[in-house]
Amino acid sequence: MTLEQASQTIKSVLGEIAPDADCDALPADADIRDALELDSLDFLNFVEMLSQRSGQRIDEDDYPRLGTLASGSEFLAGG
Amino acid sequence: MPVLGADMDEGTLLEWLIKPGDEVHKGDVIAVVDTAKSAIEVESFHTGIVERLVIPAGETVPVGTVLAVIRESVPVAAGAAPGPRARPAGGPAAAAPPAPPVTAVAETAARAAPPATPLVRHEAAELGVDLTLVHGTGRGGAITRHDVEQAAAGPRRRRVSPLARRLAAELGVDLDAVTGTGADGAVRAEDVRQAAPAAPPAQATGQPAAPVPEAPRPAAPGKARPAGTSRRPEKAAAMRQAIARLMARSKREIPHYYVSNTVDMGPALDWLRERNRSAEMSARMVPAALLLKAAALAAREVPELNGYWTEEHFVPAPGVHLGVAVSMRGGGLITPAIHDAADLPAAELMGRLRDLVNRARAGRVRGSELTDATITVTNLGDQGVESVTGVIYPPQVALVGFGKITERPWAVRGLLGVRPVIATTLAADHRATDGYTGARFLNVLADLLQRPEEL
Image (cartoon, rainbow over all chains, first blue to last red; front, side, top):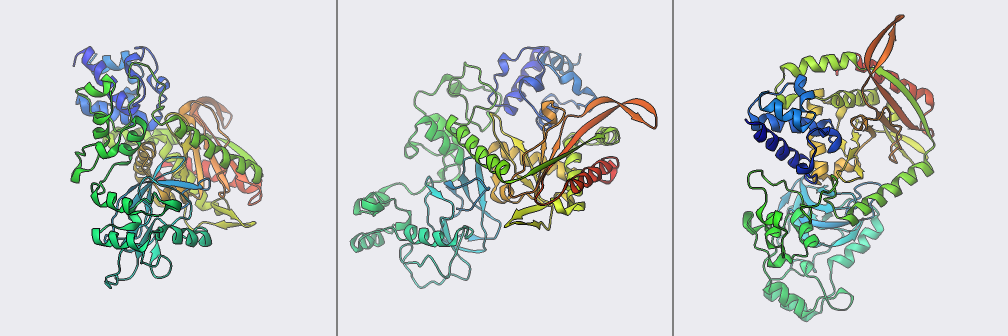
């Protein structure tokens, strides 16, 4: 998965979890949970869907890397 | 129309999920009702055969109105003409609980036998039109020949999903003109969007790859909207008013007292981390599940806080139905209950919590879930506040609050360490209990959280 694909994947998953948020306008370094007001269950849904779409297991220890669009994209792209 | 919360005085019947002749069982979901707070699935209170639907979809009626008639015994096939001739009171049991009995009967009479002249009845019988399903346009709601003819000529009643109905109202789409693509020609939200006049481009083209979630899309796609303005503004305003009424009543009537505690979450978090490491992703648990389970067990252990204050005395509840405050995107909240939460293993409670939150936000909670809570929990920790001291939901007598889990310096046996801790609070009704009981509750809760493997 390229960085760009990873970023698109994250945005599309977030679009489903928070349908009314404008994910395209989400700054790359913004705290996703804060910006979209995700609670812990939303975040769990987010992680699960990301894992399904990217085909990789995401452990709880990886959660901090999914904090922003930028770091999350790097993580998914295998960086 | 059942009372789906202490603050409800009317409801709109969005959709029937049954039709005359259907067999229903107690607990089956038979209709979807829209209240000020959300769309709610209404369950049948009886087992029997649906005799007729009294209130058509789309109508708003006061609480206590009979919605449908369900015959509990084997239906009498005496060739009784449907509708007006059937006696509403008596043998058949109403689908709605007999909330205010007197008015319910009065309403029944008014609803069940819409005024119609003998000529109109005759014509209806000829054309096979069920008069109870016809909207009368004559004086006093009387059904005219024209109404009957229209009903006979018009398309058969179609199934329309609640979201589609709401969307249609929002977008000004005439449902009769929409071609349904669902099963049996049911109209789905997507059909309404397709039929919307001058649909905004984002709706027409959509995002090709990602499945579009079943939620109304913003009308102005280019404009960023804060999370959760999907509901109509008036809907949000109605919810606000409902909350306002209930909370004002709580503070007016209930003398609250408050106790609080700080609990070491180290053992619970360590246990969770170990467990989640080996678990499938879908079986992962969040701390909230342990907190809810601990609260439910504590409520069982301190039954004086689990139940209702009615008629000047406390009535303990036999089971712990744990109300969970769920914030809605775009403001407002509802507090559906997890039934028998104290009896559920923590992992199952976690599943139920996820399901409940998802359904609450999608507007698919069940009536019993909204009315059965015996004690409520609010967990604002995810929003980053240290503690929350709640307002009790009448007629309940206690509300538990959890704050954010934060690392703090923590002294144990004269040694200072850094531990993850959480502030737990209890707001309780002083008419029902005293501070001593509240303190006992929080102490039991704290002890339980030190032994997460037993939760």
